[in-house]
Image 1 (cartoon, rainbow, N blue to C red):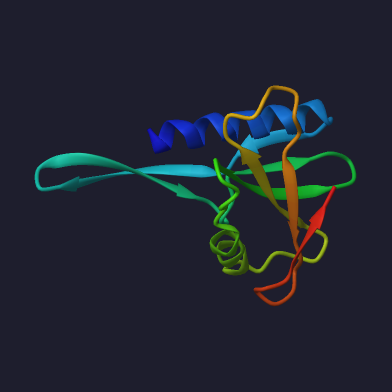
Image 2: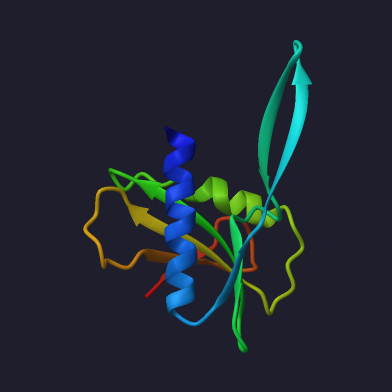
Length: 124
């Protein structure tokens, strides 16, 4: 069920970016592994991101998070972003969706700065 919910919010985030005029693609790869005679599929985010969005002025790597009680795992997402040497012109966003929220409500966006790991700011 958790994976289905994550897929739903990745799709919702992609549609939200497209409505804002961005071109959007997912950044995930799937690997298959044989463990104890069974094939297991493992999903891995590329560059710590669920996707990439761009228009003529911005390049955004984004990670979406969803929660019922506003307990998003933001520090974990920031650590993942900080594992990669993004150039200064790239924006890193964490998109926060509240589960069971009514339609038409925009997500909250946290912009991760290309600075030390605990640096993040909320933007509108």
